[in-house]
Length: 230
Image (tube, rainbow, N blue to C red; front, side, top):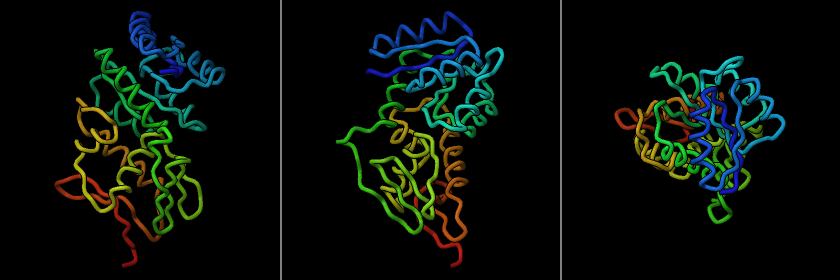
């Protein structure tokens, strides 16, 4: 897999472990041991994907993520040693696509990197049709979304989730099913990830007349256009 991954982590042992497993898959790896170095390398080399540790000196991972999300939609996986829901949810709300809690399996991390990259860069054979709804257009080929003719900036996973639900409009899905179908693996953690991504999508798709993502109580979520004036 010919992609360049930036690892930002202050523990050299963890960096080396991740590097070994990623390079076995043919990936190019660059490393930073603090947040400021991560920002510098990101701006200089424009990597394809980032793995960010939350706890780092000088700038922590959340600060780095905020900086990146100002102008970039590069896929990001967060690493955290904290078993704290607030860290995980905050990271997802800022714009992380996924997170892994230490200690973690290197093989699982590699699987998540490959899944996130594959979903973010669908091949021509995977390109689906352009979906058009009232005041909303989802273009799978360009990976673009227009709301009332204005572009909407989505992270890779936000786009994948919206596209999947829109392609299966009016069909409800559980959170666990969405984790498997959109994140492309059997997610071992809780399903708060889905809730946070839905929350961010609703904020970005806020419209004075229509809502697009509906909660199905006791089940999960579905895509259905509803006129709020009805």
